[in-house]
Image (cartoon, rainbow, N blue to C red; front, side, top):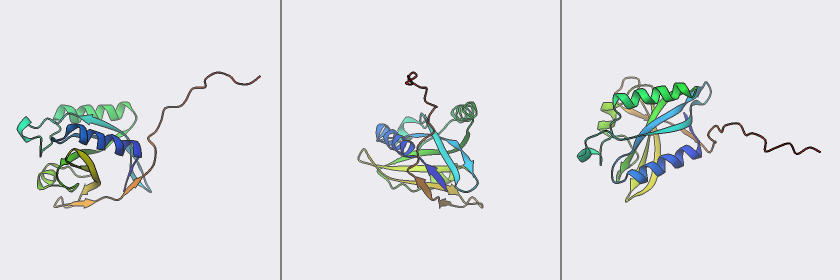
Length: 157
């Protein structure tokens, strides 16, 4: 299971709409809870490094961006728990290309973007035998971790 806060889902949808008609991509940063699985605490948009002519149906996260995502997660006391990308004018289901380029363990969130408007959003994990993706259940409606608020001054008499 993956817990995807509303703010993260909205940001992923916005990224997909912004990149349309090309695919967007980025990293999911967060942690693990023994009971509920992966918990997304932040997203990190990453530029699609596929060749320009392929971006409408392919996304690539280059090695430098992958390392940057890992460093960013570590700097924020989080883990790199997965990736997201969009499918312009296609369903939010993994393609054969997605399976060929996936790594085990990570979650893969896909948002469908139809005619520029985000629609379905799903999450997937690679099966243990690496032969297919398995749909991952999503727990939504939580909030991203917010920094502690500082008091606006002492209100006591």
